[in-house]
Length: 163
Image (cartoon, rainbow, N blue to C red; front, side, top):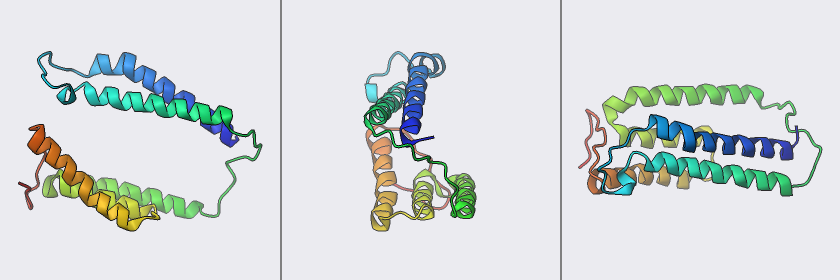
């Protein structure tokens, strides 16, 4: 399988998934009250936004696949890094299990900070400082928006509570 084939297959798959989400899954399974004043607070807004981004990424992959070179080099060459891949997969499973265990104790914001940082270091990011900054700033910014602007309660932990 070549790089071009992979991009085309992923692109078509993403577009099909987006069409399914937009026309079947979201209208059928996401309930929304009719009296929502702000469109951003509607339960339909973010699923449609993510489905739209999925379609855009799919179209981008299709364009990249069609405009790319037809290099016949296969992508699925055996790698010497295969044992480390299994360890990273096990590490990601441990991060997910730890997230579920820590959520009721630390709350969503602090747990997401730890999970983000642990995931970034598990995949050996080239930008560790940026990863740590994002691990702290993104959950805090989301908490500030949803708790103080949108008025949505964010789960707090038993140990530390945010204002």
